[in-house]
Image (cartoon, rainbow, N blue to C red; front, top):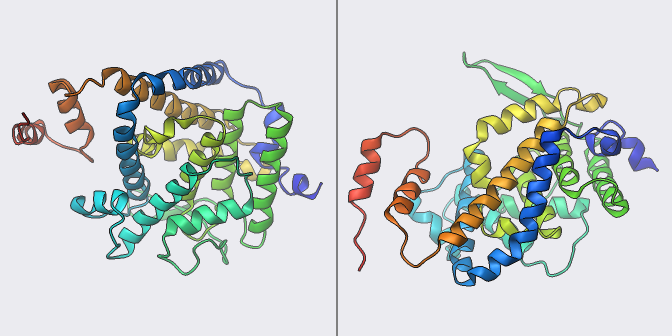
Length: 324
């Protein structure tokens, strides 16, 4: 079939022959077990789920855009994400767009087959109308540029050409559906490889990272890993951003020649999902009306971005309003 020939050097078409390291097998088993316990956790404390959903939505929208350098004022975040406030500028449009993309994913009642149209729809929603090519594949070739410590840039990776991109994305989707249908590859490594190959294609002029994170949530939800409704995977990725880029750089070397090592990406992907399930279990089990002081202090620390001093945390702590 033409699509298999077109994708012969991409990772997803080599999955059946790739060995899986013991660490990957262990992480995979942990994630599958966590999915098995997921419904019990949901039934255990249904009253806390709405609060977790709101928090995850805010964190996902904020983190996925912040990874791409897009930020808004703190007092505008909740109105845009949860209250449908009208965006005032392009960054706010992009945050509102990402929220709409997540809304679309979470509102699907039936399985939606992965397709080129779905990928372009996620991009169109995530861009929020902020660019004229929302939902359209790139029209010019692009390169992944790494900025060195001295300020110079160097080409780290050359993605699929603009000419070949539409066919490559369609081939990727066909390959994913084919492998999912024959069930010869565990579903989580399959999802991870699909997301990785999309990043290697880099099909859009801008917004590829956001689309990859949305695609991750879309495919996980299709397979019943609904933890991403309650815990922000995007926030976990942002917390490991340096590792994220290092693993991508390592695993993309030689991918167009079919000689790349996907194992580090598998382990990174599975470790993020495993961490999400750990956070979910802890939050459900610890939900008991009022949070403890240690919970509040931990949250104050987790809410900080970048470096911070202990004195700054103590100021925030003692300025917290006292609730009766």
